[in-house]
Each structure stands twice: as C-alpha cells, then as structure tokens.
Length: 141
Image 1: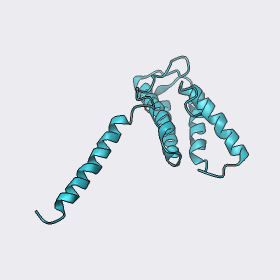
Image 2: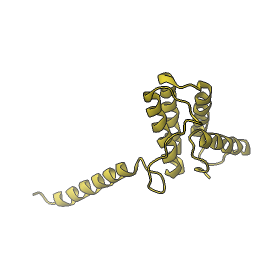
Image 3: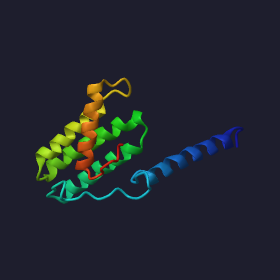
C-alpha cells in the first residue's frame, strides 16, 4: 500500500458514515419521532399520489425547522415544489394549497439577516399559516 493510503481510506469511511447517518435522521423531527401525518380536517386530498406529495412537503417543512437558518430556504422551496405537484395530482382545496405555496416561496426569498420590520411581520404571519396548514402548530417558534 502506498504511504498515506490508510489515512485517506479512514477519511473516506468517516465521511461516508456521516452521510449515511444523516440519511437515517432525515425523516425525523427534533424529538426523533416520525413526522406527524396530515389531518384531513386541514388539508383535503383526493388521490394517493397527492397525499404522498403532501406528506413529503410536510417532512420538508418539519426538517427545515431543525436546519440551520442559512439552509431553511432550501427546505421551504422544496416544500413549495412538492405542494405544486400535489395540486396537479388532485387536491380539493386548490386555493389553500396555492396560498401555502406562495407563503413558502416568500419565506424562501427572505434575507438571512437585516430583515425589515415588514419582512419580519410577514414571515411571522406566513409561519403561523403554514403551521396551521401542515398541522405543526408552534414548530417555528
């Protein structure tokens, strides 16, 4: 074995292990329990594929709550995309979905720092509305 190969192999396996362990917790919230299922009283879905997209969007919303703030916009954008797909696959309340999609997109575009008071107020409003939509009240406090 060439000199330094053992060190490179250890680094490779260490990075691989970190990657695999991150995959294991991707679907869990802070308490380590699975994401709560959507309630039909809040979100009306007509097809199984729309339900699947909603569940994936809800996981992105929940996982965003435990992500560092500089990465949250990625989770918000993903949730918005998944909700858009759910709309095309069959949901009853399209207006409610479109409103949530707009709120997620708006949150994703807010700056990391130096928000104006208007932006902060709008972000609080959007977060409360999205918590109601995803049945995750108080998640982003």
